[in-house]
Length: 292
Length: 261
Image 1: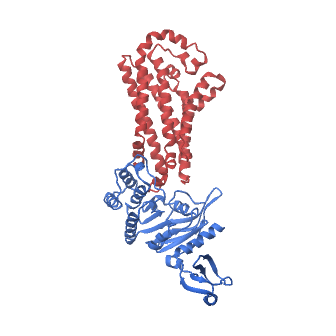
Image 2 (image 1 turned 120 degrees about the horizontal axis):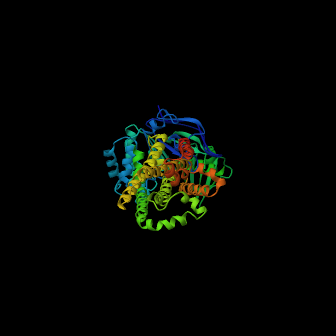
Image 3 (image 1 turned 120 degrees about the vertical axis):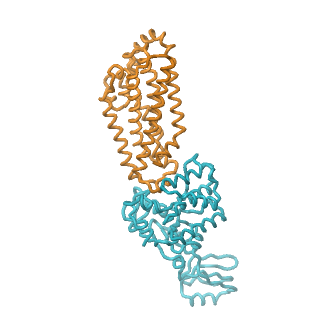
């Protein structure tokens, strides 16, 4: 069963594209990363599946329920942390947590208290006095206190200090182990690599790649770094060439033997050939976007 | 009822300030009456011979020398303007402020239907208008008792009822504006209250634009008409009720489909 399933989901704001014919499936219980550059449509997708905006065409289901038909029912089992967590000025943090629980007709004060303690949030402070990071914590507590089946997070860690980030990931993994699906939108790739099992890359409003994080990181290309000099101008499959005083580095996706022949003719003092990191692969996607 | 309670709690300061101000001003007006009474005989003549100004406030048909005449004109303006501004301000931002302040994303991702949010917010607006009018009405009766005048209950109740209905109507229209707006709509609200008040004045002054009375709820709040007929003018009440319902219907229609960006 799918926690999120979108088919041909399209949203246009007037003439401006939000997302276009987006297909995406997230299995229940998954820890799923959603990656893409700014303006790619990440937030539009999230807002659409949560019913904040209505799709121009296409359909989507969340926890097996159609987003336009059973919005309230599905929202009861979803926790959402927006990228900019904003609350009612003048209201105390504790009151916001209580309001959120009341709006869900749930009493979850014990777990809320535990979360406040673990994230070190002062519930007696007024929302307008909270720093960006503390507002984020308040948002996290509101999104998690009712222990939802699906947790949707839009750039969750911005503003959190490293200790808090660690605690936050621990909490998320606890929820995931208990069966909750985590849908994490981020452009911090290390977060995706360290936490997610599967991921999708969105660009220009559509999904351009999806699969397990290890699969997505797999590529034929290798990062080649050499100390010294060699003539590689005749080689095919060289990308992202960088030269420095010591030597050069490039991504290579051509024949290994051609590479070795070219290097053998040069003056090479040292060589490393590695698999490129996730960062490099995504940078590649991002750059294509920028070039378009 | 969580949203309803939340709204009342959010609006309590504004409600208290407006209610106290209108009630105090109104009581002060009433308390001035005994002093004015002696001088009123001359004043009445002056007031009733100021041409269009007289007509604008209906002073040609009321006796300033009686508590009722004085109340209908002086105090009427206090409740009328104070109440209208409060109703419009409260209603015109009640939905749009969530988007303007960025809290809509929080509220609307909870398992509560938009229909229910609109209903509860509308109830909160009407509850606040009702509360203000109830307190102002009691303050008015108390101050009449204090100055020792006999209270003309029927007329006073009708005058207050007219102003109450006027505020509900403006509140309903402003509520519709609130649903349509994305960036706060306080200016629209204030404009609406001011416009409604001025339309009535203009319609009173110039005979050939009398039809404007159908577009403003101040039309059925004329003290002179209420006192002389001992009834509210259904001719103006009905279009008022229709505009109010249109505003509320529009609010549901718009807000249920609105994209919250």
